[in-house]
Image 1 (cartoon, one colour):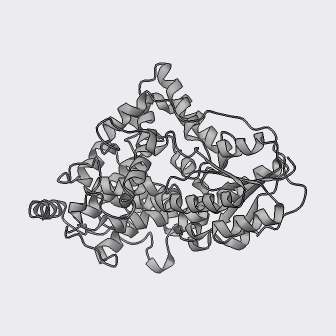
Image 2 (cartoon, rainbow, N blue to C red; image 1 turned 45 degrees about the vertical axis):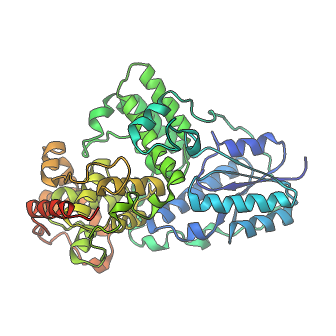
Image 3 (tube, rainbow, N blue to C red; image 1 turned 90 degrees about the horizontal axis):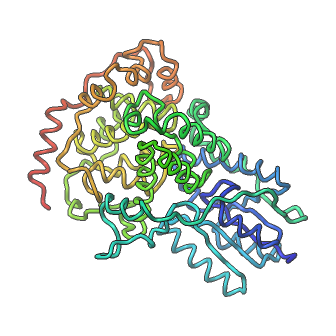
Length: 471
């Protein structure tokens, strides 16, 4: 009982409602929490890596309140864990599953190697509501369409339950740990970090406050307000769910309770949680969705693959001359997030009006989003492009101008993010110029550009390409 148990932290930056940590505590052994900067962390985009650093710093302080030091180490996970086991004589290792196919394979190898050394090794759920392999139709191995997936999960109890932690026993000796500041996880953010930081809701306490506010004030209007980008109508929890700062089960329970209390719109919130589950369901069964066309008949489609194309660069810079697209892209640089309606519009515009490969957009979001989630990001882009499962009809081309009229009729969202329309009255719009790279040489004095493509011509070109596709 005196031998410690190692808890390997991954995308579960919380203490409460954490099955792996709860198991470690219940063992009665001293707990060693460790985070490893492995190749997966090294390869993160600028904004996700910066946000991870903030989350880890906050979590380390939380552990301090329990009398524990969070250990930081760099290297391959197996090497670091093996060294830590030798140093501490730990006899157990636990972690929470991430459900990403490349990491699943790595974890299986680590588990096998440590078990061969005589250790007890266990992995736990906690990042999702349902294990991806536990939801399946009777007629096939997995669901390929969301609606049947939702119906199958609607009456299914989520795995695990909410738990509370009041005490954690740590080891007495001071373990070797790297300094988190020396990792420089935010170095690639440059000037953008000081701007985006104002919009970060950091840690599990803030995430819970965010959830409680949404349930008490907004969930009853969610079915309509979630589509209006000028409103604070969504939960905002994607930022915290992406790093496991809040349990999806806690979110589900709160939403389900609201639904039972008569707030019908809460069911839409539950569906959004399950949409996230669907992304991981597909990533588990068809890993190609993360980096290749899910519908492989799209492999020969003539998308533009040049990320240095001038029109693509203007899309990245929020200077396309199409107000809804530009407002959404500028919101991204200032807040690190983007309204869901905006994500759909900018993705449709890039892949259809500009006929540019969804992978270019996927990579750009991967670099810029503080709520970046690998499975959700991939499925969202492929859904918009038409190459993914349960996709919007590939021949549907959203008109950004009519979408703006429909969901931002008073132009509040447009004027919040575009100085060219609001003048210098909007602090958020002005913040964009502080957040972007100086090498872009974009200033508030510049006139709003002409559209990079005529919307009617862009739509016609896309439809012509679809008509002549070689499927």
